[in-house]
Image 1 (cartoon, rainbow, N blue to C red):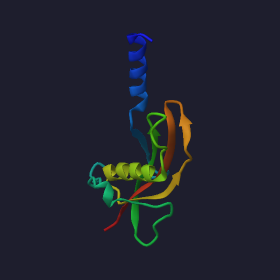
Image 2 (image 1 turned 30 degrees about the vertical axis):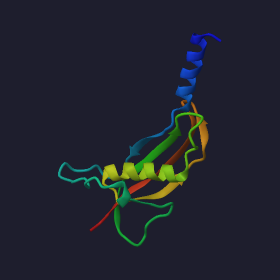
Image 3 (image 1 turned 120 degrees about the vertical axis):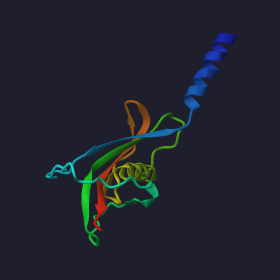
Image 4 (image 1 turned 60 degrees about the horizontal axis):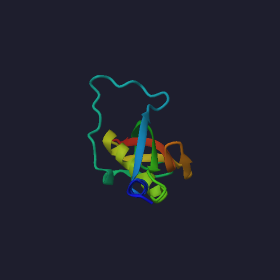
Length: 133
């Protein structure tokens, strides 16, 4: 092998061995939700550590719904670890915290699969809520 072939193999190896996962998300309004008035205040952003994630509904505290969210956690290369429910829950917490939510309820996790632009991905969705005072 000459130097050109070796450098191509090394460069390809470095690209494939890069570590990392990334997530995407979206927010949809809740069906039947009333439009916010101009005077309505949105909750302030919170830390993701302050957000609760549950597959069930919360029935012991009154809340208002801020919207439905969905996230997708992907692994960037074949060498990264597969996405887990914990990684998806963290992505849900981060998105809910940006919205000022206190919890994400009715969470549903997808299964790990190969995506068009990733070596593996997992989806998650839920409803962001803010507790009433």
